[in-house]
Image 1 (spheres, rainbow, N blue to C red):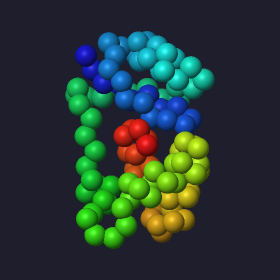
Image 2: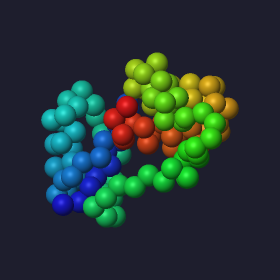
Image 3: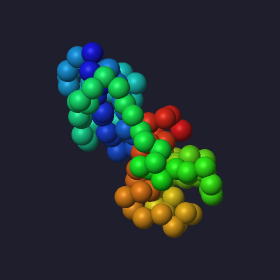
Length: 108
């Protein structure tokens, strides 16, 4: 069964589904107030996030904890959390987006 990436205003949901219709049903069941913005079928049956691509390194600040704090302050609002993360870390927009989205997937 393939994985689908379902983006809403506040979340990115990764779910197993037979097709796009079933992926929408999974979203409706688990997040009934959310509407899908984008639904993408993943090319494989796994989801991998490269820490190196996100700039997560052992030294310095821990982006995961910082990103999770930003998500909590933003009440799950992805765009606001990205802005907060950029302010707190000085990270550029693309890097902040990747880190915030990856932490949303992990279930902050």
